[in-house]
Amino acid sequence: MKNENCNDHECSCCSGTKTRKKMQGLIYKGVMDFEKVELDYPECGPKDVVVKNIMSSVCGTDITTMTVGGAAVGVDKNDQFGHEFIAVVDEVGSEINFVKPGDRVFVSHCDRRPPKCGQSKIKIGNTTGAFSQYVYIQEAVLNYNIFPIPDSMTYERGVLIEPLSIGVHAVNRVSGINKDSNVIVYGSGSIGLCTVMVLQDKGIKNIIVVDIDDYKLSFAKKFNVTTFNSKSGDVVDFVKKTWGTCDDVTNTKTWNVDYVFDCAGAKSIITDFIDNAKPASTCVLVAIPKYIEEIPLKKIVMRESNLIGSIICNEFDSMEAIKILSKKENNLDEKIISDVFPFAQIVEAMHKAISGKCLKVVIDFRK
Figure (cartoon, rainbow, N blue to C red):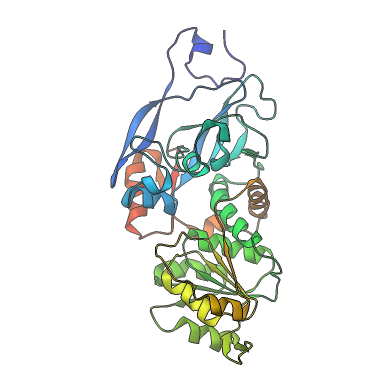
């Protein structure tokens, strides 16, 4: 007998046999070793949902997994990986009544399985399997780990909900930011530019994007922000010439910057902030630092500086990201997607992402 909650796949509930449908997916084998293989279709329990992947995108964490190794981000040998994707519901459990097969959805990767599974959120998220044809959500909860998306939203926009949620979370970590704030975003990659979109959606216009790559800065220019290549000169001097200076309690001239978002992780960024911080200004660390730094605490005290960490996102960030991308004018996809590959060429897509000669690489599972 056919299961009403099953979307026409060959499985025991439909065929009366123990034969399970197969799918294809990319698995991690080791540094610079990843392979598209045949996998079992996920088993769907009564509280679970299985979704069919439509589009996925490559994150910096995925690139780290492939080039440096997966251990630091919870990806082990033979794990599926990838976590940025947009999908349609393929199968729902018998207790699920808020989505049905065919519904267009976004999945919050770090909450894809409950804490009782024994894995960390980092492990759960980074082994979601966004580079596979189907993804499993254990104990699906509406607007917690699975979110409906508007029919008007294209899949090209939908695939960027997750990175935009990271930007939303970073901006929401601070208070007092307003349309008159002066903001520097370090890093013109996808997370940096997603942070820019969130800032602009909040009406903030005074933004400088800093990077060392003119190609990536060319994408930032699509947002009509000021850009600066820090290889071409001193970023502190440039910022002071652009926005002027302020005095701290010792009458030292600081830059006139209210908020810094570090979406690059370079050592010079935290040094620039601490050495030049405007009194009571804030630096949000979004990128994972790749260095060990001794923090000059006296300077932080004297200028009442704020250092804030920002990691992943929550369900409220995801809902805000969906709302932002639902606005016609917020054409993030047109601004940051540089390359689209069919699923048949997913290995080539990974090599393109690793090359660095791109901004955002997307895989289309419909092709």
